[in-house]
Image (tube, rainbow, N blue to C red; front, top):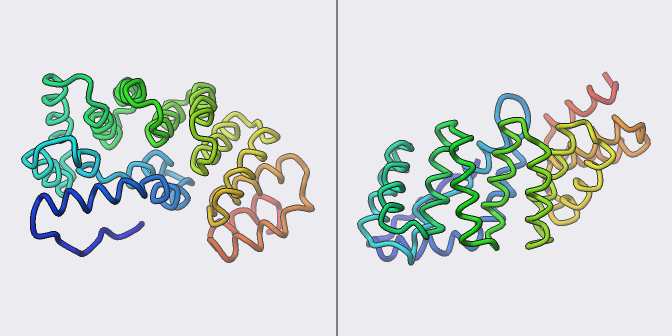
Length: 243
């Protein structure tokens, strides 16, 4: 998990600007984080959520008091408090993409995925080019065991932004949820083509090839995983029957 920056801007305005600059790298940060916890009890959704700095979403769109308050709440992991703050602001301005996204994010952090979905949907309606929110919505559907809706959501997202490694990775994961390995594999290939360091995409591709009899391709994938994530390499070896 990427550590937070140790620099501490001396004013709220300076801090807000620094956070705003981080938003421009949000998709890349989320893509790097998403590949770390996609297995076991940790969900991809929890990983995507880790890639968000909530206060950064408000830079340039909220007063300093709100930025300061939400930063304080986020530092304490007070997600009910952040949700309450978002709801209060939405009562005053129901057309704020940022506050709808933050409300969805807070619900996600509290495990309230069903409640998060309409928040993300509204945020997308207000800002349809925000690929990050599309991905959060898709993963929410996966979390509540609706992979088909996740697939439809990602397909819509890719019409808007066709070069999102995270979207292709989630598409592969969604197909793999319903054992459509033949369809999952090309999505992982696209994800890897956009981000060759995405270890979980390599792992998903390896599993898909193992399930569809393309075992001749596995040694090369395993070799790549040994360099990127030895733990995933070992798991792939077990799945492929190598141990």
